[in-house]
Amino acid sequence: MDQDDKRGFLDRLKSGLAKTRKLLLTDVDDIILGSKEIDQALFDELEEALIMADVGPVFTGELISSLKDRVRRKELGSPEILRRVLRETMREILLRNEAPFRIPPGEIHTIMIVGVNGTGKTTTIAKLAHQLKAEGHAVTLVAADTFRAAAIEQLEAWAKRVKVPLIRQASNADPAAVVFDAIRTVKAGRKGVVIIDTAGRLHTKVNLMEELKKMRRIMGRELPGAPHEVLLVLDATTGQNAIAQARMFKDEIGVTGLILTKLDGTAKGGVVVRIAKELNIPLRYIGVGEQLEDLRPFRAEEFVEALFAQNDR
Ligand SMILES: Nc1nc2c(ncn2[C@@H]2O[C@H](COP(=O)(O)OP(=O)(O)O)[C@@H](O)[C@H]2O)c(=O)[nH]1
Ligand SMILES: [Mg+2]
Image (cartoon, rainbow, N blue to C red; front, side, top):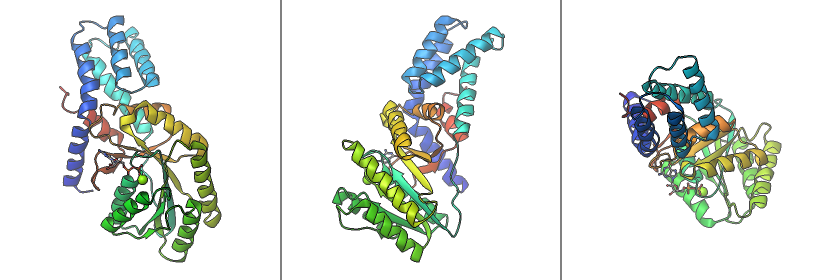
């Protein structure tokens, strides 16, 4: 990533997080600046503002009790310091969940992308393919969301745009058969990174989980170690629902990492903090728009910088 590119992304991240920042920090700042001293009323207001901003009850509870401890130890003199402690605490928690993945060169590296319909799986696959290709990886896409013909065509259109090969079968083909065929094909030829799109229809939850498990099994049988990654795509605008989806997919099929999409234009960006605090799954990438360039590895430092940006004084 060159400097211009990096600055561009940070700007997009900052403007994407504007609503989250407004919800979280405007309130926090009002509360802090409106208080002359640190007292229970201030803590109550702060707690309410944090809960509203989707950072979750666990983070909020721990933050408030750590603040109270510091007040008892006389480490916090004035309300303004609370803001700095909030920022520091978020940073520490987010750092623990920062884990960009590494792809070993020259081997077959399979990545299954899972998640509920509409969270951004197919678009994210295109962005990821674009990025990995630019880094020099041979990328192959696999259309294993065979439930709707439109889903295959959507991925096909992206594959053409990004200029990577796509392995597909007719719509309504068995997704397990599609991955079976795909693994055989890449083993015989191209190697590199294989990204698999999957279905996300939730109203038939049991069937979906069984289908995903079967795909996992077939892949592991054809290629020991596969799938190397199971990345769950979550939509940030769904806030708490995203947390529930993560728990379900983690319990049912196992998840090695998360991708959080649509951080642009939502006030629910606080969910990143909640994810870090309540789910023990690394956050690999974040999406901040619909363009190919709008996906980046998650960096705690960058995120906190963007979140606290314009209000800093
Ligand atoms: N604003 C925004 N839209 C996104 C992002 N990622 C995906 N989308 C949009 O979300 C919609 C659903 O995406 P799609 O990839 O089809 O979801 P899927 O059903 O999980 O495969 C599309 O309109 C995408 O353009 C993002 O980071 N930001
Ligand atoms: Mg899709």
